[in-house]
Length: 136
Image: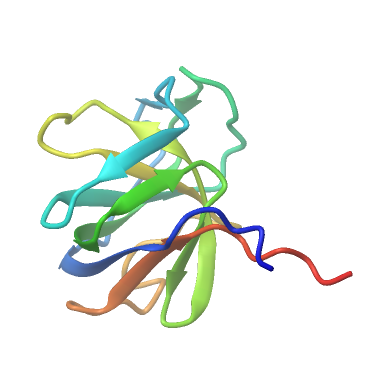
């Protein structure tokens, strides 16, 4: 039996972004989970910075783009972010500076990525999922 306790959240890319910043000043929200409804649009942002507590400042970022949620559910810190069957990174939190318009979903990656760096194209699927259990 699987110990995964939630279904994946899925979406499609609706806008691609190709810029990076080293002075962005995003802050991790106090919440480790966010519920996303089908039809909502949120921004995907990568960082190579280590951050783990609410209000941690994130300056070094790359913008992937905006994703429209097609399968609702709960996204939480630690979730894998999957594109084209490849794990891009893991959710480290949410920045609320543009809320209620959208959340910035912050993704920890080995290096800062843009849509070009990740070879992304419009209408491709993005999945947020609980990391599968490790084989024993």
